[in-house]
View 1 (cartoon, rainbow, N blue to C red):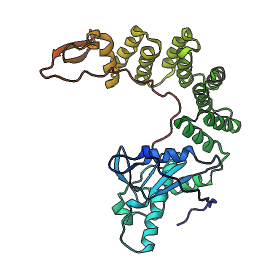
View 2 (tube, rainbow, N blue to C red):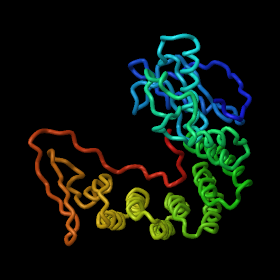
View 3 (cartoon, rainbow, N blue to C red):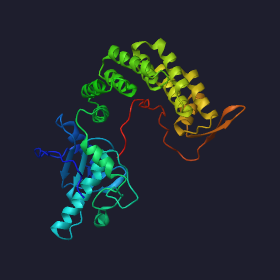
View 4 (cartoon, rainbow, N blue to C red):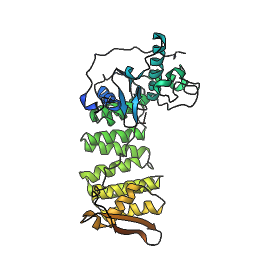
Length: 353
């Protein structure tokens, strides 16, 4: 059954596949191909369908016939992975099912266990897939297809897409357009601030974060973002107040203390405060391996230099805190990498496809 809304389609010029997306086995990374296409997409693009005869994969899937990231504009379809048997009509039905499936992901629809084109299916089973969306997902697809380029939902997703692609100026423009439609959206103001900060417009970023705070005083995200802005050099002395305010407002305490510990360790270089937040994460029941690794790293300076291979064992005791035990490894081993990681992205995130 056809969807009720029709949109004009435009066929773009043929492009060479980027060599950096090609793996040693000859397959192409679908994520990299899609990103390359989205980077060149015309600004008035509603959806971008990339068709290729190249074999596709992703880090999570060895073979693919289609791919899309959730709630982004791009989808890719490879004719190479389709079964070669059957009539021309059967081939067209398979193609249509793949495209509808990936299009559904761009509208935010996940996999469906029912009789639906969104059912997760290998290429060999495409003939068993439904021809359309189920009653639950059809209205979502209809609403997505009916969106206008000036709708706040479309603009906000476009802004997140451009953020992920590090097209900061384009992200700023999309957030500003969305805020003209919905000026009271604190997430939009926070996203705008993050994009402005990445684009080097620090004063404007601070103003955007302040707007987000005024609209939603108890939201932690503007405080996380301002902590990064101030800690990275804007006004380091005020950064601690912002990160602590973010922790106080964050309803997910384990995430909050992990984020604060990383911030103190990586941005401010304040080891005692980093340790305090990591320990609080553990006290509250958190067992994030990255937190434990960082805590061990900070509490056991001897692990910084390996004169010979060592095994470090950490155990949490409610009375004594983190207890470390050291044992020499019997066999030579490669020294561990410094577990320090990049700061988490505290801004809005696009969904996965």
